[in-house]
Image (cartoon, rainbow, N blue to C red):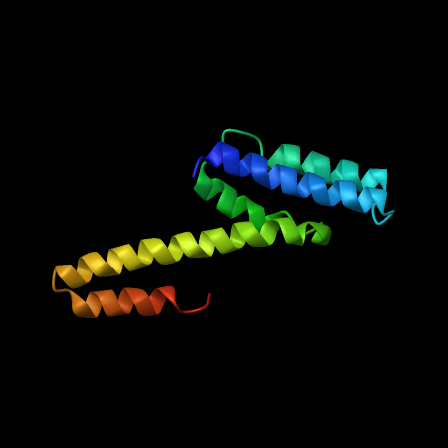
Length: 112
């Protein structure tokens, strides 16, 4: 996935949430400005996909209303991590390193 397109999609999702909350009276202009400032500070291009994955979970730390836009990014990161671990474990298994592969899989599935 193109990191810039992914970043823009995340921004669009956040802006849609802000627009909806402003229209419904669930957010005031000052709060929207704070969120916009935070987005400019944290999501400035260029960013790698890994940087986006690291930044996204922090966006709703002070702005819980953004959680709906953040959840898909966290899910994508988890899926990407699973894919990478699975590929690595598969290579270890193919090279006969069964114990190492099992250890890697166990470590990847242990909550942090």
